[in-house]
Image (cartoon, rainbow, N blue to C red; front, side):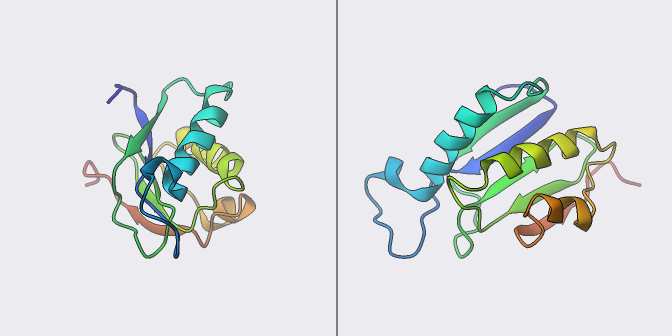
Length: 129
């Protein structure tokens, strides 16, 4: 895994109801990762962020799963992400996350990008008093 202060993990094993198990690269999670990686590559402010394909985020009942984390910041887990429709919203959310000193994203900021209902968890950083 690349070293960077901010990480965006995408579950590549996610698959929607009725989706075939094989080929694995045809699953919705793998498709989301490819789309997001393409969008990420052209993101002008991507420095300090790395996108990581991850085998399973454990949000199987709410595919597709994405997580954001950084040292000293809240970690976020998103579900119900739609490949082909949510990549720009995730990149914009990552921009807000990077700018936030503690990583906390108020509901109204997430709502602007259509991700309010997609938040499954926000986990406080270990470094909090």
